[in-house]
Length: 401
Ligand code: 4AZ
Picture 1: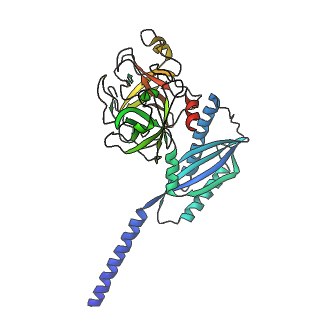
Picture 2 (picture 1 turned 120 degrees about the vertical axis):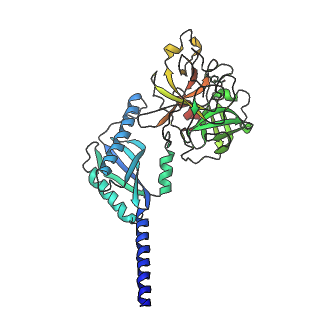
Picture 3 (picture 1 turned 180 degrees about the vertical axis):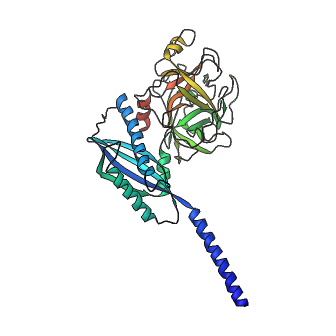
């Protein structure tokens, strides 16, 4: 009787453990990354860098992402499909090659080879008959990626952030959410914050030339990342400072510099590069932009420890060149942003930092560099910014991005 009871209770315990393991294991999931390549045929993209090709590329990126969304959302894998992201569009003869990464979430109990076959079969089947884009059937390729490579590739993309969008209010600004502006850097002279800067690659920053008016020796400078100056999330030594050849203090024209640091940073949710606009792009007056920085909250104030942000509007040249605003002080390669009424503005310590705008895909572009202004937040004296689009080729020629 005792033995029977013992066997029975052991069986119950074993079954309970088995069930527990089964449920726990089936609740666990893994993220899987696949690299998909296909060619869109019968499509002529002019390779000149004019406005048109820029728009065509943007559209093509969106159409490709929508197409792949449709393929998987409308398939047996719909519950596992997370997203896709175009990483490259390459013009080829009579078409464009699309490289994208697709992300799935699968239960960890299933075998990877089986899943890969499923993904491939759906892709193959659906690209035979695409509704939106003429895909060259024989060009479709699928490669499984390790999750570390997949994450890195997606994170290498510029202008993306993970922070939820909290609108806060620099000069009359508000404290920025963590990871909201991961390209923001602080340039420090002998350990003291002097200027802002924007991360545009693993090793390069863009900033203002006037930050180096007193000292352009890289050895005196360091750069830090993160939303606080103290403690910094990461610190690097400056290796090279390239100030625009035509910049001539105290003139304000050509107020741009690129800075190389070492060792390179690895992109994470908190540190990531911003996109640079194409040289052909223009931004409309009155469109919404954001500035961020550790600069003072009022003219004559101190640098702050917490990153601040403010929402501004681009001001047209016609308005900013009026005699009661800045008149002929606004030169080519500059633009104004803010409000003629004042209040929201950049201030001392924000110089060199980013003015960014986002496109329809929530990708952020660096379109201005905080440069100068009369005092801060005053009526008829908005902030003046270096026009990044105007200097796009100069930047590319210095650091090859
Ligand atoms: C400065 O001194 C500075 N209001 C930067 C921006 C503005 C004014 C001064 C714009 O670095």
